[in-house]
Length: 369
Image 1: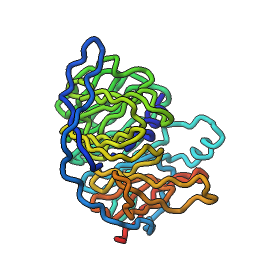
Image 2: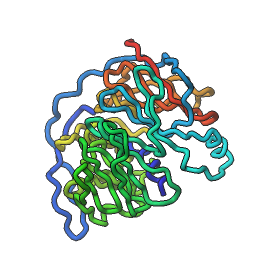
Image 3: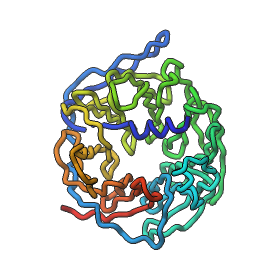
């Protein structure tokens, strides 16, 4: 079941500048029917220009850090929390399809100034920082059981909460400032140091078994695409976590939340849209292409990887991107690395994986072009 949530993150993509549209305020659901779709209005000012950079100069680390499962930079950009398999046999076990013990997955902290591992928080995966950086949440690694979210207080260096879910499929978490918003089935919870409460309950029609629910980076919205696998248009619901109200999107080819806030990137067969937090929708008439999306250093502008031609005889070492309107950006990163830019765009931090060797943490300097 947990595999479906990873598929959702990989499949969710696409949008920035052009014409704009605004959502009508979603109406309350009536007899299970979703609210209306957006209507249009003039475009707002375009995004600031993207800086052309080449991010392919690798930085040497004090030690090799491999078997990485995921990571998250702290809000101040000084620390990296990463999930890592400590068992060196995990990779070879995966190749021969034997069950892998989840227990040796740990959360470790890397100082991004020295690039050295400075702490081992303990058993966990999928780390997330709170808005202030005081709290770090992560999942307990378990096999085929409902998710347990752990909250770690970095100020006192200890675990302060364990949040148990009951649903095997609909579980996700995101930080809204220093409040952890998490989904347990149809219930949207909001945890704060003072306590945990159910903020809203999502109508069952918005969470069918074929859906792929994913919270936005700030926990204020939830996107649930019904049967999305990238091969055909589908319907999706965009749900306000505070109220449970939903807006319907039809004919969707891909979705992606921005790395900050709850800006939503949507791709259709013949165009792209970028739905801002205030409901404004910007449009670009660029046909759908199945490709990966990278977010700009501020986490707000989507960059679309130029597809590798099917006629290519060798896999290119680097990849370039186009912007929301389909224009070249002159931004280049290594092909086999998935990650993110730091806040000022001077470094690209990622998980390198080529399918043959264990994944590695890699850092690259970004040089202006």
